[in-house]
Structures are given as C-alpha cells and as structure tokens.
Length: 295
Ligand SMILES: [Cu+2]
Image (cartoon, rainbow, N blue to C red; front, side, top):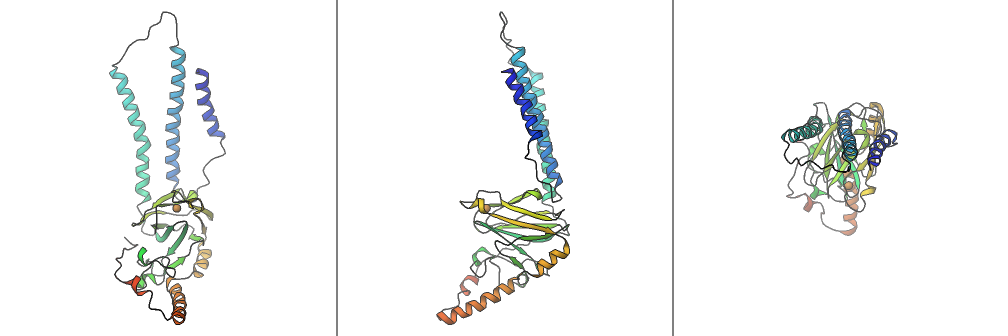
C-alpha cells in the first residue's frame, strides 16, 4: 500500500509533465489567466503530492508492531492552528489572483470597440457597429425572418450596424482591443475561444461583456461552453484575426442592417402584391419595450 501511494504520486507528476494535452498557444492579452491557472496547478499539485507521501509515511511509520499502543490525542491546539492557518493561506492564494484578473477582465479600456455576439440554439451571429461606433437598440420581441437580430428599424444608430449572419466567420483586427457584448435570444450559452483564454455566459434578458486584444493572426474555433440543448455540440463558429488592411477589406463586403431591411422590404412588397395581405411588420414594431446594447 505504501508503494502504491508513492507510485500514484510519482505517476501523476510524470503523466502531467509528459502529457500531450497542453494549452493551445495563446492569441490574446490574457496571459494573466494562464498565470492564474499555473499557480492553481502548482498549489494543488504540491498539496496533492505532500498528502499522498504523508499518508504513505504514516502507513509505514505507524504500522502494527507487537505491544505498541496508539496514543489518544483528541485536542492538539498547536496542530489545529497549524492546519487551519495553512489551509487558509492555501485557499487565499488560490482565490486572490483570480479576483485581480477578473477586475481587469471586465474593466474595458477606453479605446476598445464594440462587437456583439448573439447566441441562439445552436448558432452564433455577430454585429459590428458601423461608422458611428454605436450599436442600435435591439429587442428579442422584434425578431423575425427578416430581422433576425431584432433591431429597431427606427433607431438611426442601428442603420449602419454590420450584421454577420449565422454560419459566417467573425473577423477581428489584430491588436485592437474589443469589448465583446454577449446576448442570447433563447437559453444560456457560453462564448468561448480557447486561444483567447476568454469565455463568458450569454444570459437571456441581459447583456454580459468582457474585453480582449487579439495578439496574433489566425483562425480560431468558437465553442459554446454551456450545455444548451441537443445541438450543443454543433454550436461552433470561427473567429479570424487579421491585419488591419485585410480586416477593412472584409468589413467592406458585409451588409448593413439598412441594406438587409431594404432587401426584405422588396421581398415583402412582392409578397403583399401576391397575397393582398396587411402590413405584417406594424404589430411587431409597436409598444415593445427596449433595452440598449450600450450601457
Ligand atoms: Cu450554446
């Protein structure tokens, strides 16, 4: 048994060192998050090895011997202080760095630009403010086939918003801080790009956010990290980090909200002519309370 415990301790360390499962190379400014995870590994790893070796030592040192009797020691103030103090320092060391990193994670720098991430079962879509830098107001109640983002057609800020439909890749310019505004239109999702070391829940009815600066070019997977239904595993996307020039060229090819609504309007007109129906958009426009993507 002593040998088994020692082998488990040594084996775990050796497996960790030679494991093929290391983090992907980082692609954002969040080296702090890696640092915090490393610290957690060191603290929990050392405690794990020490506890195993201590158990092995006790098994051997206090093994059965003829005539030996165990000592009864229910109150040992010194030992209790030592264990309580040690545990307190260990737990504090695990938690405190995370609080510092978190405060930076949600403190968005002035120069950050907004990008909206919209999650729904089981697709990602994105919205980028146009030249005005402001995202127009949105409301889940306005969502329909022609307006999948639920934008307010009367809000001037929304007209130039660039819509990246489901299935298309999100592009981000290298070195530009971005504030990711996360919006879900059905259930809980979680936006996660492993190379960015950044993730956050999308919560229906509210807008959550964090920020990051992409630090190298490349194409990275977007995963949903919240079990969000039977299609959860298919909820994937791609984010392309590229140089400013390539980014601007891509941006110029994208459609604005005004353009998509104009197209939908032509389609609707044709449909009305065919069916002699009423105005199908007026009901969805009226009375809906609004919440703003900008805080
Ligand atoms: Cu999801």
